[in-house]
Amino acid sequence: MGLSIGHLVVVLLIVLLLFGAKRLRTIGSDLGSAVKGFRDSMNEGKEEPAKERVEHQQARGTIEGEVTGKETSKNKA
Image 1 (cartoon, rainbow, N blue to C red):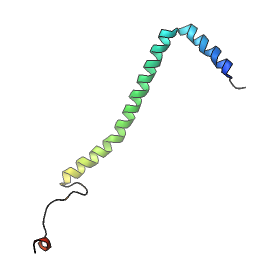
Image 2 (image 1 turned 45 degrees about the vertical axis):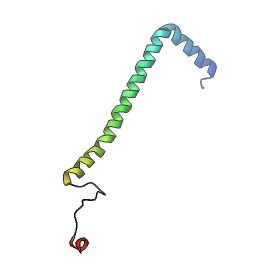
Image 3 (image 1 turned 180 degrees about the vertical axis):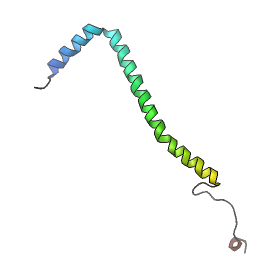
């Protein structure tokens, strides 16, 4: 037994009558803010290891692929 479009419309009308349009709009915006906050916090967790890796490379004195400018004895000749 699945839900048809008619059933969904009836459920939507009942919810609209119970809560009202203004309250549903508020609930929707609160839910959207919560989802956005969750996504932002998930992205922060992914970005931190990359920052730590760059800081670690800078602490070593060079960054991958960086030219240090030191000349060897072969280059001077």
